[in-house]
Image (cartoon, rainbow, N blue to C red):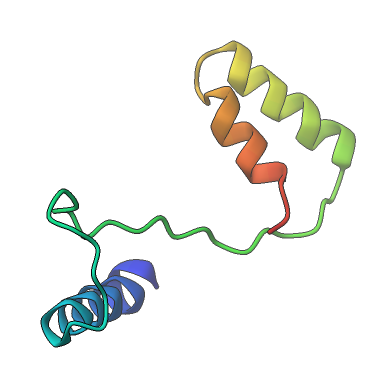
Length: 74
């Protein structure tokens, strides 16, 4: 979904916003990156989910910040 729809729409939107002058982000910002965060699903087994996340952090498969972001509700 992100690669087929969201990214092309974002790229076009940011391009048009910059060209029209509606968005002024300065010259230092050169990359058109956005972080897409998919909606999470309800837990099936919260204890096992938590243990798996902690294990991934301990094994350096996931850094602590990414683990925290996956648990924060926006």
